[in-house]
Image (cartoon, rainbow, N blue to C red):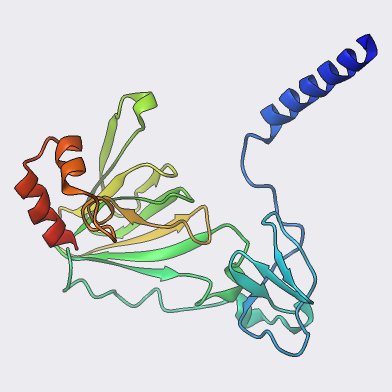
Length: 240
């Protein structure tokens, strides 16, 4: 019995030590690349695996929501795209538009854990408060004058960090924290953004809270935000 207890204690200690080491970030993929493809016929997709547990269908591998292209059929163009020199349409919406390079546009991006995008802001344009649940974001201002900021979690007392950015300035937004970007200049603004995920996700706070499908019970929101019930109903009409 004593030997068994010592064995169990040793296992617990090892698990505790292991937990302290694995509480970090995803490890590197186990292959050079997994170029996304829609070609699922002909048995030409490889049996491979990455840090994301793949779903295997016969001889097809489904990783990060995409099938892997046979490495022997991968070409230079799988890792190339263009078009970020073209301004986005800022006429509609809040005066801001982002042009994202995703896996559909750049198949070689799959499983690499990065993304890039162009943001265009009209004068007075705003990218409203939102979060990226799966990745941090870094901004490089190419043109214009931007007011940006993010809010820390409750652990850090919901502290607001803001900065006015000019061409050449760089600002980083930590993963999952609410942040915003606003053009406070008199001309258009342009930003190149990079992220720590091929698909960092995007949750616009107003849309999520007041425009969910189905709608959250107005009584819940009225109490949560100390708002009049009718005001909540109005906001749900606006956002939905």
